[in-house]
Length: 336
Image: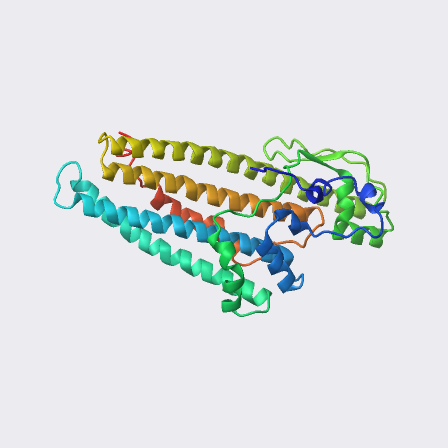
């Protein structure tokens, strides 16, 4: 899912000791700059650096919900078109008419929910950026018209040097409390934790007070878990992208079959809704991947925690209310 790696992002995961030796006049770049998203940069500037992770996560959620709303509105239009086409017909559309009516009602309800969710995200961002909702909408107008989602311009790392823990505030606080040197991390790497096999969890040899050692071990587990989540979401997003590519090809084939009279427009509209389903899943997957990057960057000490964010955390739970509706696309009518 990543097409390029920026110079900034490429240097984010290197050894801490190397970075601390950089020239003093080197301009420090913010972690969110690697999303290479102009609107996000403007939001961060307007918020004055307050709750950076919360602003980034909410903006990502707003972009996802905007895309989901677009896809669902298109689905509703397709259902309306199908309903018009089958009026006055009998088999095989007698039961299908009832399904379309239920589909339309569900779409209306879910569209209302999506609009409410978007409104809550806009309100949150307006407060964080100290501006009116009207001013925020104007600032984000072009970004919300753009169907692309923020992508972190770096490859997903397979492992990280232990030295990244020296960037974390909790490790530095523990070092100050217990007389340790946070920069003197042992050699070795942090790998993604496998919850089933505990693979990736290795004993570490950190000198010093047991409480400091515990703080370092806890920090490493959090980074390991964030890395696992990032790798998993990257795989999910890549799979979703492949499905969309196939769905687009199938829909183009269906249009040609419709033009040749091999399938009806009702059937074509089912294929179109199937494509919208896959696009919806891709938007959600890319949103979760972007959020996983935010969490990951926070875990290695580049931003505050997002544990206290209200709103975006529930995005994944909200999807479960929408996807069942979208999955009711008739497989019997698609590509017969």
